[in-house]
Amino acid sequence: QVHLVESGGGLVQAGGSLRLSCAASGSIFSINAMAWYRQVPGKQRELVATITTGGSTDYADSVKGRFTLSRDNTKTTVYLQMNSLKSEDTAVYYCNLQTATWPYSYWGQGTQVTVSS
Image 1: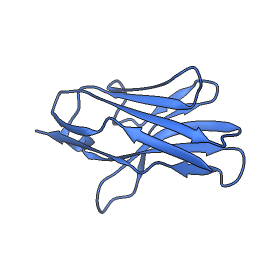
Image 2 (image 1 turned 30 degrees about the vertical axis):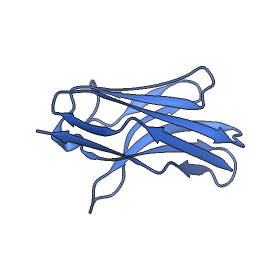
Image 3 (image 1 turned 135 degrees about the vertical axis):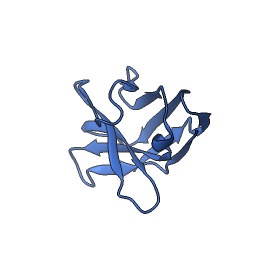
């Protein structure tokens, strides 16, 4: 079993910064990638940023230049540095871990990010 624990969400004013963390633990084999998604009520969950095992990163157009995804040397903890936050960044942010073995995808419990304008 794999557990993902997220932290770092909260309330921040527009233009401010937050740093989200996601630590994976448990029986972790063959990690393909880790990612952050976000979701607002009534909308589909959207991909924010991804980092592959090789270290390649990809970002949603809406966050490029403002968000940075990184990880620690164990490759089981990722950090999402969010700068120049906007009100439209308000959402519940979910950490996701993708593996090469079943069940192929794990989710964290989510952390609320609220940006006040």
